[in-house]
Image 1 (cartoon, rainbow, N blue to C red):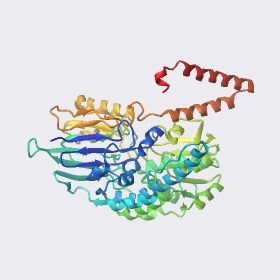
Image 2: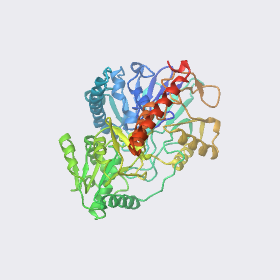
Image 3: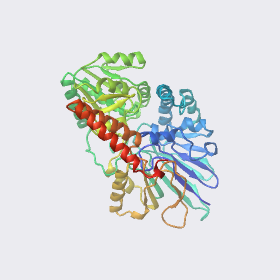
Image 4: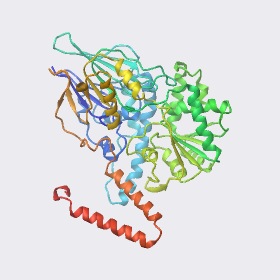
Length: 541
């Protein structure tokens, strides 16, 4: 008998979580997430899956974030017709998130195809539609925490609260083997692990004693201050007062799920206690508005906040659902807070607000979470002077601030403690959902704590492992790759071209006269021609 695990996403990158498990009797996925970031990575959302969707028996979902669940409608569209097991909170959130994702894709593809038509390029099709996102919810089967489920013969599953977002889970798997007959192979998929003492949720929870653990490493090697609820609000209040104190505008790109609701809860308290100016707060995200309604429904189960659903409904809050309402916010050039999705600035209404405010020197842009390489949020975080939004170059004059004390992820030290609490881990520890530096830092920290370094594996995209081999550590099998390993998790040529174009424009605008600009362009022309002339013929085709 063989049990094989293939990493179809979240390998050397923080996106596209998808793990494919095969036994002699069944095959299934843990997560089926959408790729985000560079165009070469996002192109995987449109290509063929590295497995046959119709052959899968079921799917287990850790939580509702797009990079873990965003391709479920496409999976169904391509032939999957089995159940999707998830917690009730995850199912409730995705009942809005998946149709919203389909709607955004329809809008973006319409805009993209206009640009492609002008360039003489063929149209592209959307990954899935709003209607297909809505229909996907019919496949969901809600499951409670800490209760055994048997989705297939010889497979048992339990969900444990991961403390990341509403409904998030770590997933425990027990699979029967034939050597010996009563042997159970035990696996734990961490999902995304929440920080200790997170607003709304209990600390992450899961059993110990495993054969394999598959653990996220988003914040590997990075620490974070352990703030109380009051200290967190005070820091947010300082930023808000500074942003508005200069007759300004505060724009907050925020993930529609959890981050937005945490911000609303703290802003409501700050406004009620007169800790910040009494200004209108616009929540400009139909998905975030609907998600806030779900948080209303689950508010009685939240921890450490002493709040009710009314905390999301302060009189200063204005929820703008329609496009007309969203556009009306443009009339505010000072004295306003705007919260809009997406958190990495890659889609949704936030791009409209950034286009409207990035060039203003009285604006503050507050990044409140992880920014993946190749995203607009990452470029802003890294100090870009000019960015391109919807084909238009925008000069960045706004104050760009970045905070991580609302992060839904455990920091590096907390991840080490979480892993230590799962031991013994007898055969192997896979580190996923992280960038190269974070993965290596977490691997080093775990090894320094006494875990055998040769049993810590950093899989690459599409790596496949035999989990029942004779060796103690998992055995890597050769498998076809959809992308070269050195492309995954890094900015691609599209990003480099955009950055080069913006840098060149900045240089030309800063040049003192026309003669200097002409000299710069001529030198660039010669450099490009020389580079092409000296390139080996094999690399030109």
